[in-house]
Structures are given as structure tokens and as C-alpha cells.
Image 1: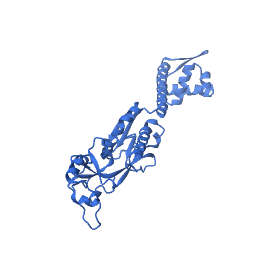
Image 2: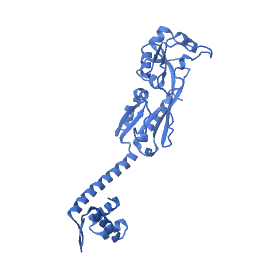
Image 3: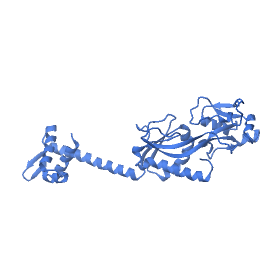
Image 4: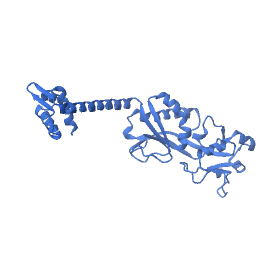
Length: 304
């Protein structure tokens, strides 16, 4: 059934007159009457009893009027909810990001975010595969690359660097490297060759400070897990190039090694569909993270 005709039926039933209903629609009474006749023909029932003093609903009309009233009320509730969502951050927000970002870095900010926006129902989806925001596998994403789809918008958040770290216990036992060449005499912990990562040369410390014709250093340990690499470094096993989102954790016992030298970097973006950009719950997390990271950037020399 045509929704415009059903709306016309609902108004006619409420007004009890074709003429008064026509005034609401800015149509002629005959045009409204034809719409009702079309519905009656389509359903094969009479919806109104026609009287000289007006119209009354038949039994079938009563049933249809109840249904249209419920639908209209639901539409009003939905409209109010959508308008509210545009102005107030509330409702479900599904955030897709990598395992490393979700396991370490992002979790540092969630408590403050949810205290600021208690009406947002947050779901974090850790997945190293890039979920499709266009088909709503997630609402937003935190990614390490600018989206190539023109339908997506992005907020630049920060830049992470690979830096060298080691546990205090390791440095007390094996000494603190003072220059890149000193790494030749240390235990180096690196990623396995098959690890997925956004950095250009994730195992750069094997070549760091060497001349072009010198062979790469031999690692003490290879492991294909960012979390595992950090844990090995924290246990005092050796020196590792660790991405910032793992090394800055307050609970970490890691300290910088050769802090004036910085390895490869990767930019972090908050990504969301342009079609959702007017909804506050969609942009709230991105704006919150950007503000916090800009503040931290002013306090610490961690970011570009």
C-alpha cells in the first residue's frame, strides 16, 4: 500500500471529514476521497461509513486506523531519536582497530571517554583485517593509513614511532648503549619475517648504525607478536624496537635506549563514513582522542 494514501486515510479518520483532511494536505476533497477509494479497492473492504454529517470508521477501518496510528507514533519516536543523536552523543558506537592498538594504546583513554559520554555504548572490535565501514561492519575505525574511499572522512590523531627500549634489569646487567654501533654487542629482539605491520622497516635496529657493506646483526630472538615482543623486553631478555602505543604504558618497566634516535613512523587516523558525520556519537571519540593527544603532545615529545 502507498504510504501517502495511508497517511491520508489516517487524517481522514481523525478528522471525520474529507474536507477537513483536504485542508491539512492542501488538496481538494475529491482528491483525498479518491485516495481513500484506491485503498478500499486495493484491500477489497469499506473503511468508512458515509453519512450526511460526516464519516465514521467501519470495523475494517478501525483495524487499519489502529495500525497506522502505531506506525506514525513509531516514526515520530524514530525522528526524535535521530534528531537527538545528531545533537547528543548517545547510542551504540562500534570501533574497529588493530589488535595492537586495541590491546594497549586505545584502552588508556576509554575510562575518561566513557565518563565524559556515559550514554555511548562502546564496542571495540580488534581485527588486523580492515573492516568495511561502508557496509557497516563497524561504525568507525582507528587506522594506520588514510582511507582511499572518497566516501570516508578521517581525523589525523597522532604519529607513532619505533624507538628502542629495554628493561632496567637488562641495562644494569649488559650496560647502556651510548651510540648505535654499541648495538653490535647487545641482545636484539625483533619481529619475525611474517608479522603484519604498517611500518616500512620494522626490524631497522638490525641495520641501525651499520655501514652499507656491513651485514645485518643477528637477532637474539624473533617473535611475530607485538605484545610478545614487549613482554620479552620487559622480562630483561634484550633490546627491542617497540611501537609507542606499547612502550608508553604506565605499567611498563621499559626505558628508552639511544633516545635521540627515532626509527620508522606511522600516522594514526580516526575514520568514519561521511554519511554519519553529523551524528555526535560517531565523531565524539575522534574529537576526544585528538584533543587529548594534542595536549599530551604539548607535554611530552612523543609525537610529530
